[in-house]
Length: 143
Image (cartoon, rainbow, N blue to C red; front, side, top):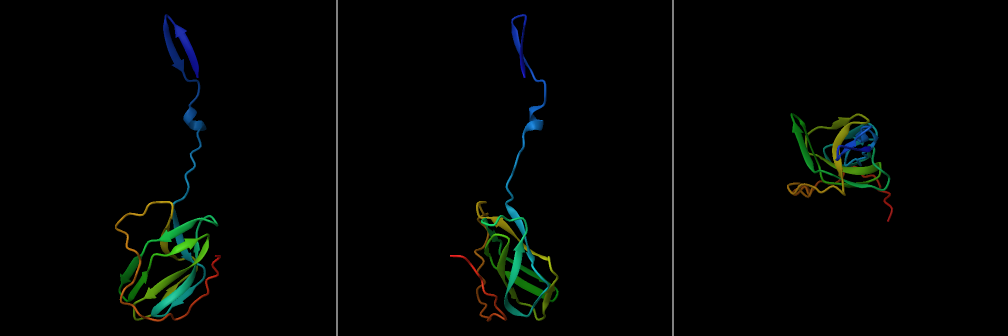
C-alpha cells in the first residue's frame, strides 16, 4: 500500500490484493457418525460401536435425536454425547425385522457441543419403551 500526495490530495494506492493473503480457518462443527463394521440389529434395543469422522480426540459432540420409518424399517436414535473419533450409539429397532447396515453407513450427524443447539431439539428420551437390550458393548469411558 502506498500513500501518494499530488496537488494537495492524498491518495492510497494498493499494490496487491491483501485478501489473497488472508487464511480463514474455520473449525468443523458438524460430523458424520458411521458404523465401524457391518451391523445386524434385531428388533428391540441395541448398542453399537460407531466412528465419528474428522472429530478431534478431545472434542465432545452431540447427536440429534431422530426417528426413521419407511416401509418395514423403523428405528429411533436418542441424543447421544460422544467424544473423539469412536463411541457407542443406542438404537431402538421398533420394526418387526432385522436392520442391516454395511460398514461405513452414515447413521446420523453430530454437532459440536460448542455450537448452540436450536431450541426445538428434543432431549432424546424415548418414553414408553421398556425393551431390554439385545446385546451390550462395554463402554470404556475415561473418568
